[in-house]
Image (tube, rainbow, N blue to C red; front, side, top):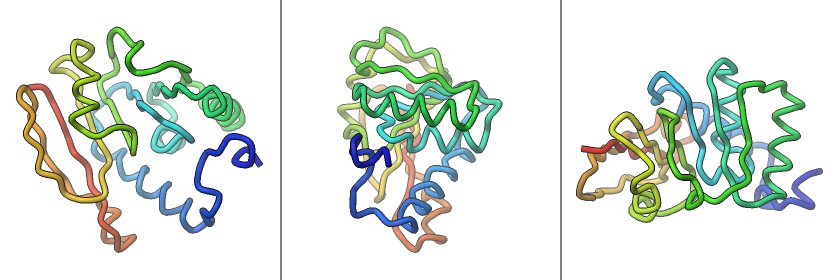
Length: 168
């Protein structure tokens, strides 16, 4: 219903595809550090809403600049009673400081571009997890970057993984 007016996911997406997206995002939970999470460029709520469903006792902030998408996310948050989820309609560039421990992203920006946009907003306490489809060798000064294959790869028989990033 919402996808017709909000363009949340591809109009050709089937229920099975949606289940794969959910599984892909749910596995991310195993890679988080204890503490709060911010999902940058959350779009339709992948992975943020999935994480909120799996771990309703964790504080989650969903950030997206598209008002149509954030209104959908508010609806989902309220319908599912996700009381520790907050939704922010803003651009990453407008955030001054990221206090959440875990920063997650899925199909938001290229890793180097994302890290550049996070300059002066993060510290060594932050763990950044970028969902990627294939292994990437990435060297960015000031950051330790490790690729980890997602457990979803074996289940879905598709390439899935994470770049786990922390400041050096």
